Picture 1: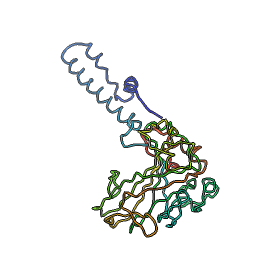
Picture 2: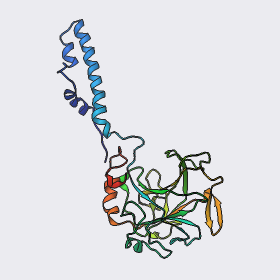
Picture 3: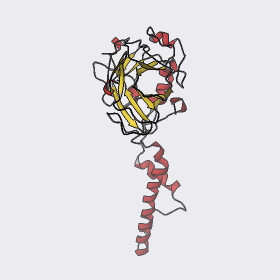
Picture 4: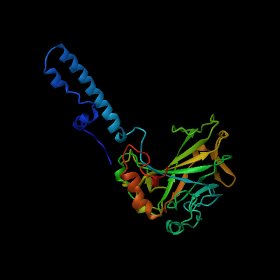
Length: 298
């Protein structure tokens, strides 16, 4: 949804904004003389001020902010740390979020039919997991669904879609500024952000190595034309600083540096997500808001 207001509408609103029936400048100047000229300048200034006030009071709520972007947000707890990986079967030590029925034999259908979840939204029955960052606790994970560019072009996320995210970044103290390297000097809470690709080739939903690429400002290439919301995990760590060097589980008793960080997502959300929330929270949400409705996650 987009909002725009024409100058004509601003002028049409002025009579209700000006107080005391101020005479328009053109009528004042028509009487002639120095006093009329001064009066015209004063009234002209009042008109300019009224335009500014009308813009601020009436248009402000609808003007798009540079930092606003409609989104869906879910908060999840890590419910298990294990070697479960139903997509690739890897032996990384993983933190598990979402559907608590996840095993190495899980499918989109089995997850969809088992509605147990570690997240604060009951419709979030997808499974998510990511390698353990060595000696770093996790106090929670925010899962975001966004739609950069034209959000009206996003489509439903197919149940059973397997996604791999390898784009990791870091932040310190709740900052929205992200860095490509761990914030080793951070002495506050810090976070690891991992973002998934959002352009899909639907002929190979179960091949996470080739089924998805990232859009460019919401535009997908012809090889992967099916656009879904851009999913990101914000993995939040408590106070205490960042282990230096930051290492990530790469197998049984094996560790790699932070560039090995990644995440997996096996789609199995309940139908309300695709059938209602994508419209409410993303497709039809004004550009000027981040949260279009409380159902979108606060």
